[in-house]
Structures are given as structure tokens and as C-alpha cells.
Image (cartoon, rainbow, N blue to C red; front, side, top):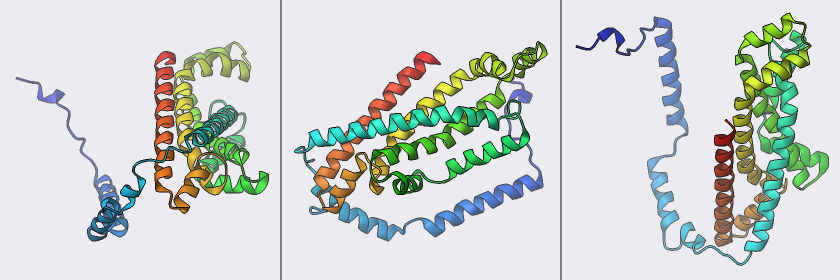
Amino acid sequence: MADTASIPRFRHRSLTEYLGLLIVAGLVISSIAATAPELGALGRGLERLVAPSGLLAQMFPPDLSRVDRIALKLLETLQMAVAGAALGLVFAVPFAILATDRLSPHPALRMAARAVIALFRTVPDLVWAIFFIIMVGLGPAAGVLAIMVDKIGFAGRFFAEAMEEADPGPQDALRAIGASRLGLIFSAVFPACMPSFTATSLFALEKAVRGSAALGLVGAGGIGVDLKVAFDLLNYDEALTIILMLFALVLIVEQGSGWIRSKLI
């Protein structure tokens, strides 16, 4: 007979916890009721989508006449993503160090670093793209800066959490023998956090490739400009070509980053 004490069971919760769960459930249900599309409207939309003269019929077959130009714009999109992610990851490291309790030199600096990381993570990358377009003009430079700021917020948070969770034993030992703050960081913290840093960096690159296409919609370079023009001119067959080629690029980047992750972690 199995030991009933070893069978996993739901933990008994307090009345306050049950009340909190009810509030969350009520929020989810009310949100779905307030924002979900009506079934009738959804059905009519699907009919227009698959009708003989609907959107899908106008998309197929894809237009391959401008594949060479689309490939060049995809290359620009990839370059934007790589440059922006690389710059963002580099700058995320000092922000994450300042945001870590045991590594920040002063509580005020820690709070300021956390506030900056939260700000960069909160503002959408499209808003950053518009901001940098005003600063440096239309083109991929604005897209690179927008991706950089977004990745500082994304990676800075996870880098800081990884350093917070690192084993404090080696750090305390180095402090006891008089190691400097930089020596402690490079000798104890970074080696322990490197697997997490690597995974976060690769996820940031994947996210940058997916996001860089959308930045072109506001003029920040990349394939997004061509995609917007194709939809504006009702060239849906060309839009499908762009979508399929972008999908292939994202798959290649995800498979490549997965292979690198399996080799390094």
C-alpha cells in the first residue's frame, strides 16, 4: 500500500489567499468578457478571409519577383537585430551589477539602476523607435538604438536576478581575503552566472530579430517598411512573400541559438 503521506497534495490556503485567487479569476473573466471578439463578428471575419475573393486568395501564390530586394532588406533587419542586441547586452551588464543588492556600491545607485531597467523594459520598442527617429532620423540607426534600449531593460533584469541568485559562499570567501569589488565580480559572480547569461543573451537575440521587423513600420529600417508598403498598396501576394521569408529567418536564428545554447550551457 502506497504511503499516503508521500502523495503530493494541494497546500491548504488561508482565507486571504482564496480571496486573492477569486479576485484574479474575476479579473480574468471580466477581461475576456470586455475585450474578446463576438462570435458572430469572428465568424463573418473568417468568411471574408477564406472567401474566393478574400485575403487568402489574394495572397496566394506569393509574388517572387522581388525576392532579391526582400533578401537585402532581411539582411538589414538581421544586422539591426544583431547590432542592437549586442550593444544592449554590453550595457545591460553594468546596469545589472548596480541593480544587485550584494554588488551595488550604494542603495541609491541600486534603486536608480532598477528604475532605469524598469523604464527601458516598460516603454514599448516602437515608442523608443519613434523617439530615436526624431533624434537621428529615419533608417536602421534608429532601429538599432531602439533595440539596444529594449535589450538593456530585458537583459538587465535577468542578469541582475541571476547575480542575486548566485551562491554567496565564494563571494564571501573572496571578500574575506580582501578581494576588490571588480575581482569579486569577475572571479566569483560571472563564472557562476555564465550559463544564465548565455541563455538570456541568445533569447535576447531571438527577440530582437522578431521585433526588428516591426520597427520598420514606423520608419526605423528593416523589412518592416516593405511589409507596410505592400499592405498599403494591397500587394498581398508580395506581403506573403515577405512574411514567409521573415518566418524562415526567425526559424534559422532560433535553431542556431538553440544549437549554441546546447553547446555552451
